[in-house]
Image (cartoon, rainbow, N blue to C red; front, side, top):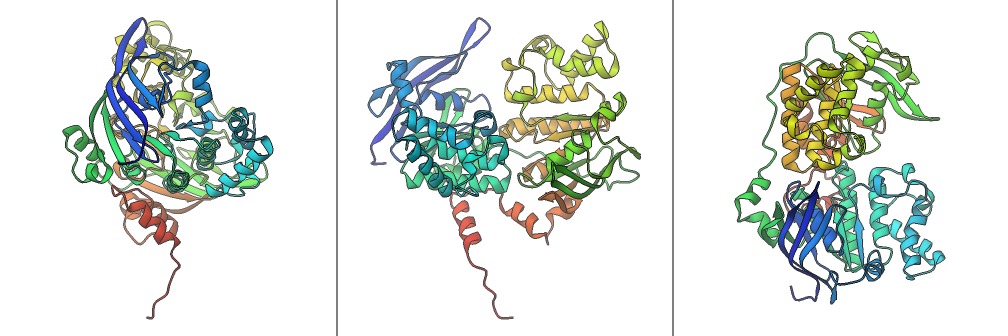
Length: 543
């Protein structure tokens, strides 16, 4: 690499606090990034990827402190710079794209207002010019209705659109460096392709350097020039992307390449009456139908994976099942009996039988409640447990999810890793002793090693308690690992359903084929080939 060095980090050391104890979590990391270069940072949860990425901005999150090393950004020593100098730098010359755009945008302000804030504040351009620039970048990011989408609020656009709008916002001051922190992790495969292509194109168009943080090796291979692997705050190895993919040197890197070996044993065909039936359901938000004549069954002890891109109706179907969205037509049957359409019309026992585990454990768990309260409340409400019986139940549930009760029962959610938080979400659902659990993208925000642990746990609990799962996911590797049956949804309709074996065997419906073809491969040229193939005109040869 002959281009000028933009960022040079040497001997970076960062400590994290737990109670009154400080522990080193980044242990002497070195990092060099050239102008216009993209560096991929990969590793499992707790490797220090995001902590290093934030340090590249001279920033340490609450509960962390930078204790050693140098951070040189284009000749500026960020560790010695004043807070005022760092504020001038952040957003203008260094930008950050968070994993969850939905949690990062201000819900009270329109997208274009949030786009314009940085360039106006930093004096890059006046408001009128910033609005025109926003529309131009929305168009470059291939957002629908680029002239009008900025005048919507964050909740009025899809997750993938919001992630692209955040990338456009990061480019508003034409920074020299962007930190992408898991920008496609929670997106479905087709949306992920759109966002990944947009990120790659915008970085190339403006010759912007980037640090791309992810646990998805196939994704980072499409964007990064080099890859650095981290484990527990230390560097494992670093190499150019092609060399790393072809011949990783270290055993840990090879283990990352080989992860997701787990697959649930094939189950016999479903027999008897289903535990839950969604029958000819049509549902709407306001006057707009979001589900059209949706039907599928879930049998006891089986997992039905519901797949489809963002906006296909997967989570909306779950809202209908749980009574959060009463249907306009059709019904939901539980053990052969029709459930009241609205939540408030259901008995406590009907509510108990169907529980949910949510995608974002960070937002699903009350940060002010200790684990004994979070897990204990459903057991108290649905089963009437009190005192010692409740304490015993909470401890038993912590044992079930493989967390030591003595260590964890009085912890707050903020003192847990992402995978541990998701385990608490599982324990909270189990506390009600349900027969059906709806898992809404429960592994999408987790690294692949933690994902595998969660899938193994869910499978063990299913076998032990005969649970039925409705598993909402965009990850086809997860579908292959745990599903018995698959339902494919598009634009609020079921377009294909069957056993897992049937669904993965050709021929496929065109949309199912699109989903299958959108799963990234460990090949740096995969995205380029895919986009070229999809852009090519269809030709018809002679018979």
